[in-house]
Image (tube, rainbow, N blue to C red):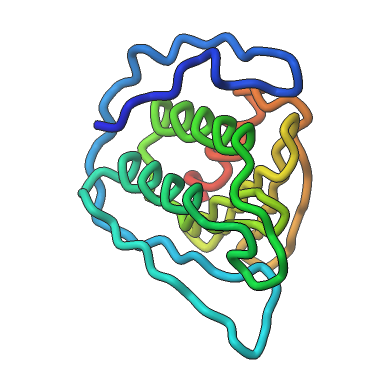
Amino acid sequence: MSTLINQDDLVTGDTHILSDLSSLPEVDLLPKNQAIIKEEKPSSKSQFVSVDSTTDNPFENTLSNLDTIKQLPDNWDSYGSPPLDAKLYNNAKFFLQWIFSQFIIPEPFVVPVAGGGVQFEWQSRGRELEIEFSEPDSIEYLLVFEDNEMVEGSIKNIIDTRAINDLIEWMITG
């Protein structure tokens, strides 16, 4: 299992997030998925890079895919985007540790975002959920309902686990 981040490394602005990450429960195994790294801006030379899942554990695979995105160089999209910001990486990792400790969910697509962010995408029961980390103190989300109605929003406090739980429950309950 991957090493969990040190809680002192998880920051929002100058505020340290205090959370006991030392004893996350095991996640039930689900079938493998793949994550697709795709460009945020379309171009005539659009490239998709497949990141193969390496285990049958969606939590481990998602962390591995996040780590792969963390390694992207400057200008990874040929539009000048920087690599994944360290604070956003730590916030995203905390988010993953939290949701996989609370829910049995499938592995999301993990997508780099222009500007140094990262996005997680799930499709379940006719619904889609996108969670984006592009600002250190908030989480942006997009809900797509079965009838293709879309609702965008943000969680202004990244440690608002109740709001995070509500989004995941919305997705998995269909």
